[in-house]
Amino acid sequence: MTWRTPPSLHWLIKKRARLSGAISIIDADLARIREQIAQLETERLEVERQLAAVDITMTLHEIRVSPNSIRPMKKHRPRAFPYGGLSKLLRKTLKASADWVATPDLATVSDLAT
Image (cartoon, rainbow, N blue to C red; front, top):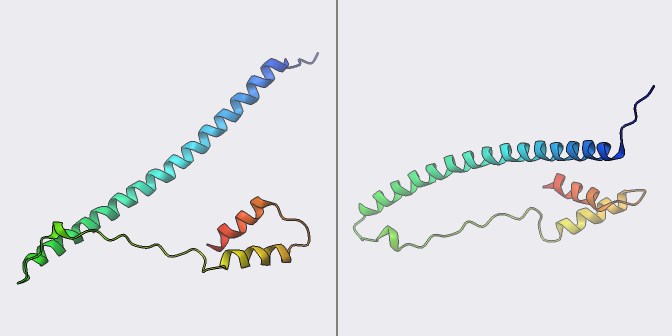
């Protein structure tokens, strides 16, 4: 005699499997983010050390400038693509494909190019 899983129990089993999978994805993301945070904290400590060295060096100069009066400059991040580069890449991908291309596939192509 075979035993059939009731639909209500089957639904709960599938729901639990999905939630468990979501937790494992979140755990992996958390581990990656914690690693990035540790790397950024190390980088920040190094930059703070360099800043302190520059501040001390400034006090040795004959012209006195208060380090606190100097406003911070933000570093500009380089573009992932030159102007018009993403459009060219997407057009090239669309022309090269023999069949239709889904949006997630185009996103993958642009992610690979960066």
